[in-house]
Image 1: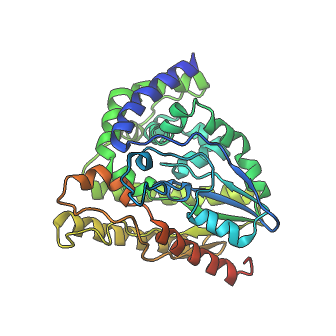
Image 2 (image 1 turned 90 degrees about the vertical axis):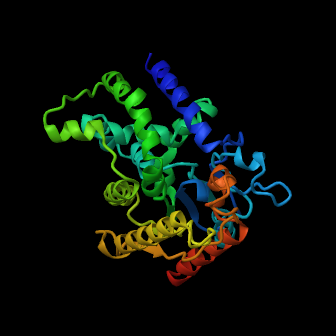
Image 3 (image 1 turned 135 degrees about the vertical axis):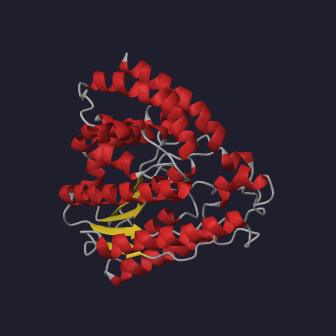
Length: 355
């Protein structure tokens, strides 16, 4: 019964998400890739580390085959995880990065208390968001990929010598940008569905304060106010994720892959949309850098990798309707962009004596 309800909600959400994102996956589960010798390398991340957009047809990134490809752990040629893995001569490389993943997805896999907390009414929306970001792996993967990840994630962390963490954009910018879509879905399907799902898990909690009621109902003003709110949630989740990782493996070396500005090269540069989003992108990148490298209680334990400007797949101008149809591809690194990221990561690892 529980699985039927979950599948039904997932299918409904998937129909909308597919229309928004327009992505299918390559049917390939390859979390563990064996190499000759060296360290055990674990990748935690989202679509960038997963390799989204890296299957252009004759150099055309907008090819439907490229847009309709999601990944399930394989190391994609030309991506920074594969470049770093080969440079390290890693004994084992495990890529747990998935398209649309957030810190919440990882916390729900490795932190039982966090997963229980997601059943509290004030956290219904956060849990709903995490379900949205795992829709396509669940539905299109026959509900098989994520359970495998969840079952093995703690072991992957235990066995890792080096972990790169490249996650945060979906927690912040994507969640804010698609806030109206997510909220509409939440009010129409998600909020009511959280109660029976919570009951099935045996963790039903009553709303006991006005603040909890407000949190349960969500709320949305404008994109940049929502972005500021998402950043606060992300930084809290980030600290908890690092805390959990270190509790599992106190000796692992951690590298945080910084965020780049996806609007840095979008044209026309003086467009109001481009100016506002480019400025907010700079603010967001600087905020996360300052938090991870300086203000987080784990700042001295995590090596922040400043990737700076990263080349992405070139897009048509923002005043062309095709910009919005294909931007999902064009906010991701191209081959040069992945090489730029890998170079910065390897430089940081070399400074630590890892590489």
